[in-house]
Length: 257
Image 1 (tube, helix red, strand yellow):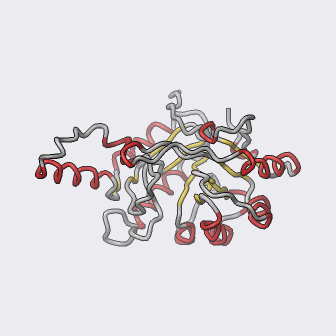
Image 2 (cartoon, helix red, strand yellow):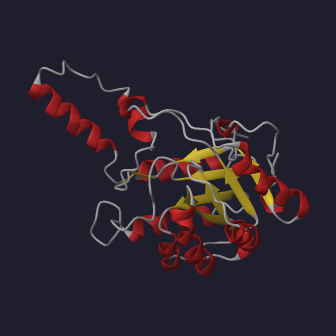
Image 3 (cartoon, helix red, strand yellow):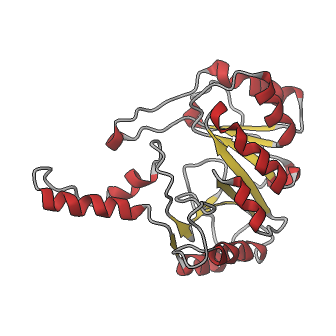
């Protein structure tokens, strides 16, 4: 039996990336920085070399489908103990740029989902900023689908998530939590419409001079109170949120040692 891989995310046992890349260009994205460390930065005075370097950095986030990774995902996970597997940790699998004939097409996404179907012992976790795109696909029962928000301005993403995904298999990632959800209505929507919430901070992005950010505790405490008062609501607070106290809860279907 194969042992699980390690990762720093916390709420999953493994990550798999048969599809990579993203065109969102979020300032806080950690992926370009984590990958660019393998590319030597030239002398800034050398304009030609810097032009090549910038193109190499941009290429990191170009959407790609990796059939070899998908085959490896199936081959390895079929001999791995039941696990929570985050699919797409280094890209956006449901972006507007995914279309027939593109570098990543709906057919590629369907191939990933079908592979998940063939591994029913695992729970596969997907995240997107475009939850309305979930409606284009038929997810098996071992797939959980979530959306990412960072504050009140992203609350609109919850509504298509509700429409596309059953309550028992939907979740929200409030990471990075950058703007306080101050209204009780925000808390109630999240608590009533999802069974699992993940809260995290923002990691530093040195190449963009973006500092680490930990959401204030008073932003987080209303969700802690909800988790205490409503047993069906599960809360996972990542260590990068800087919260004093440990909340690493999972819905029953995701409770795997």
